[in-house]
Image (cartoon, rainbow, N blue to C red):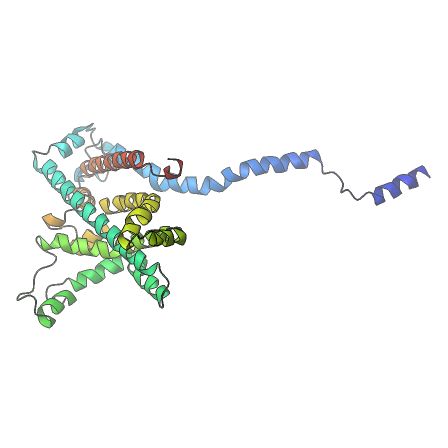
Length: 328
């Protein structure tokens, strides 16, 4: 009777049976380890793609690795800081060339970032409202950014061709604005051609980021400002710009880093021998490394470029308080 009573009480008890403590402990340990297990592939990829090549490049910058030691680069003599001294000797031809390339890159970066931000802001304000065909305009604006880089730049290289390019055909043959066909990829025109190509490629990114920020601004603020008599420009200055500041700060930093490291556009447009007006820093380092076959000097220039970009990024983040706008 006692056994039957215990069995009937167990069947009537609605509570589930308790799990073993070992299983609970195992599940708890797996739950703690799971985040670390999930990030292992990303850490390995970052290690082999960025960290190890970075350290390898820093090591090469301390060697006199030229074309005479390529087959056995481990036998290259130790150079110490000699490559850095050569790169920073601005009175010498190599250092003067690096300084000239740095100045061209700074001017190029400032113009590209400013023009992309202005075009992106204007386009975002244009399509932020509700009107017929809004989605079509958004898609159309994103086409340059969606195209592969080399496809877009090669298309511009064909259009900028002196004899058969579409730009000269339009300006000289159709509109008659110019008497002669200019060389858009030579001389001082090369800089403006490279600038136009880069702006056309990158401004949709600024448009996309700015539009995402605009859609997070409540409409009530604009309606209240309009009731108070604020015009469109005053609303843009007092509402749009301050509330877009977190997005704008990140956008400007990303575009600065992208543009300062720009390599694809000048290389596709001009090849390994660009005009002096289009000698960007990344292409200049490439020429010293893979054309002149002075890998030690090219690596030293790369390390200097990395240090400059890290310094600018840290100062910018601290001054503009990037990522801490909500805690200000």
